[in-house]
Amino acid sequence: KKDKVVVCRDLKEKIMPLLYSREDLEVVLWPEDRACERPWLLENIKGAAGVILVLGEKVNTEFLEAAGPNLRAVSTMSVGHEHIDKVEVTKRGIKVGYTPDVLTDAVADISVMLALMASRNVGETIDLVNRGLWPAFSWSPFAFCGPQLSTSTPNATRTVGFLGFGRIAKATLSRLVPFGVTHCVYSSRPTSKPDPVADAKLAKELNIQEVRRVSMDELASQSDVVFVLAPGGAETRHLINEDFLKKMKESAILVNTARGTLVDSDALAKALRERWIWAAGVDVVEGEPNVDQTHPLVKEPKCVVLPHIGSATIETRLAMATLAVKNLLAGLDGKPMPAPLIT
Ligand code: GLV
Ligand code: GLV
Image 1 (cartoon, rainbow, N blue to C red):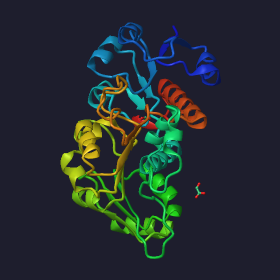
Image 2: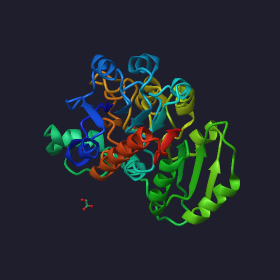
Image 3: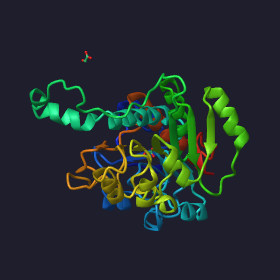
């Protein structure tokens, strides 16, 4: 009897053959190009041996009970994994794979882009152009000016801050060094050990003055740009709140390319409206994907909002899909997954 594999998004002609070519598998594909409906998933997962899914699809007790005891491999096409109940999955001995590393560059690119877009009023000004309002503004000496991210002025300093200092944060930092960044401060989960030797080594490698782990208060008050790049989930919910935003510089930018839940949307909207900070750029918001013009951050002109496209490059999505399939097949075959989350 063939092993059933459920695939929650069509991975298209470049990737699906990796699955279809396996004669020992019965592939069940959600046929549409939108989020897989829960009742369809719960029905089709019955008796399955493996599943490929994405962020919206919760792997919880309901899902695992619907699947039954055949399920041995779960593969998520994402680096984030807060949609997976790790305790329940581990209890059942199911292997889980995810897609770190392959999306690091794409997300670092878009993080830099959002910092520039926010500081240079790109959201508001594109909107004016699209509405035919350019003639009303013309070129004006001090219109639409924002703080400059780059600097080559001798002795000037630029401090970038990171909430979470993993692979994507470091890749973002390295992109900003040629912009003139001199200092990097970051805040990490309280359980991780401070490593000033590694920090000094990184600063030397990047040829900047300092990389330093700091408290949340210092992160807020010292950074010209704060990049939010920590995992989502209950433990990190609203780490960026009114208290944090009030401590930031008036000229500062907030960028969130991690998870919407890390930032209290109402607090950020208030901070922008009342000019506690300069602007914000976010690729993720609370409540996504059910976001419309009434969302507090979409409504806010000083916030550039993108619809979670951080990893959306052709190269990266192909690499993520390929890795997701390889993880799944390794899990089914009883081999080590190339990118295991739970072994
Ligand atoms: C995207 O947000 C991911 O977790 O891969
Ligand atoms: C602006 O367009 C300039 O020429 O300075």
